[in-house]
Length: 244
Length: 236
Image (cartoon, rainbow over all chains, first blue to last red):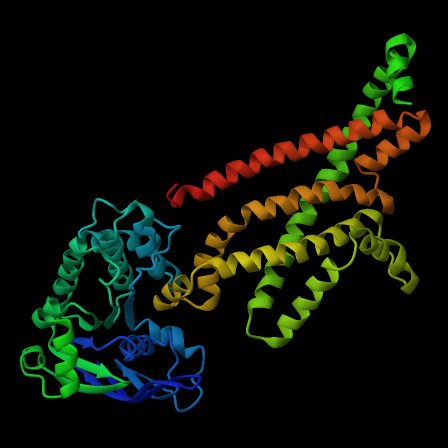
């Protein structure tokens, strides 16, 4: 589903990604962990070109973006539609209700009929447990509820891959569970997911593979039980001992 | 002088009835001037100016250097020169090179250019005040720059810019009095013309001032309503 080849990203003089290679099979859940500044969020943002990689290649589904040449601007929106992004700060549209937030993509981008989109959006909001809150504005919702609207909004575009950028980091502890539950349900339905998170218990339970990134490279990867119980690399051991 | 004027009001019943009569009979032409010229001039110029302002604001935040420079010069030139001078250039100056424009359209052009420059700074600041995450959220669901701008950014920016834009609008109402200098027979020019026949300058100009004040007062009520409407999605 996702193939990343020798991906580099440089901000001015700062090299953030130094040659990432990664293959994600369809339906797999990948959790990316690593210290702050390691490049894990940048990697995720490169996948939907919110950050344009300096070089390398990304293939999602059957669409290819090769960053060693100039990527034509018009190719980017259609490439982005392959992925759904969930942000740390939700980034809901504050001037729209939950329902309107979810409907916005299909109506504006895909040009679908409002009535059909409306039904679909109501079902999606029901799925994330907000069937009774569809007409609420973001400011009337808790952080956990807002993040679930964010997930529904991304799903409404029917992406092939869901990207989560620290989806629970901005939440009060008691609200983390409701968001993780929605993510687990999604994983069980066979959605391909790449998740940057600090929720190690979630990674252990839901991930097919855990990737540890440090200094812009993948240091270690493996099954969650292997990474968490018997990390091979010294840097992984050190990182895990600090957070557990 | 003040004493004489007030004295005459108390001691000279004929003077009083004359003032009342002039006040009464001039009210209608003044109001007409407001309705036929002042208000349309304000509305048309504001709408055109706003369109110009959005274009200039977008040009200034675009990545295209040439657009940035053109918009920058426009804003700088308009803000750096007096409105009255601009009106004179358009109405009295341009005929020199063969461009002759009637008073009313001249005024529309002048005021639109003026509003465009001032409002563009307001709109630019409002757009920049919307968090980057909103752009990213729009892009992440596959929206283009234009779609994100139109559906996500401008609706939020408009809420931020209503108070300062109202300010510009109210200033514009009063600035239209300058159109009297290029022969537009708007309200203030009518007051001047009437006063020239009966020498009751204080009365006529006070009357004109009162009508401007009433218009602006009504506008500030409308502003409050719009603000309330647009505030429905933010917690108080």
